[in-house]
Length: 160
Image 1 (cartoon, rainbow, N blue to C red):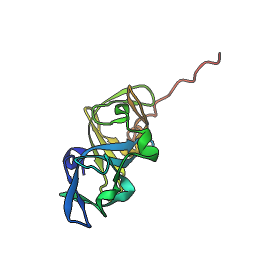
Image 2: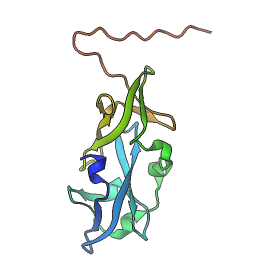
Image 3: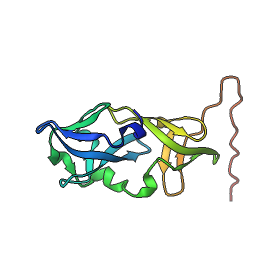
Image 4: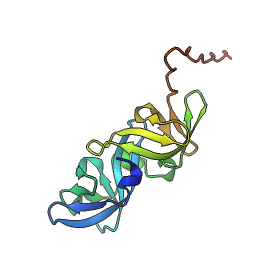
């Protein structure tokens, strides 16, 4: 499922069979290639739904046991709330310093939260190639050479 498809999904309480929030965004741990929480709206309980508290993520709704699972961010999710960690719209550079493009959308596994693919203005990038994300860019491991292509030589740094 893509972020663009999942945004605005209703968050449903299994206990009350009611809508308790809507998905507004995603908190991603880039080095782990995983969605760690969902940013939600329209809830008095809290603004975040941590991924382990998601009991189902289908094409029509996200399901939680009950509304009390909507909380304030904690743990790793709390460390990643700053806008500089948001993937969509982020410049992408590889670890050789080459521009790859800009993230346009992200595909994730709705059963695990694993980031599968980054859709960029350039080539698609496998989610497990993410190294880190900050204010200026998302860094990914450089793509391996195509079969038959020689590997890219990275010059050694001179000693001081």
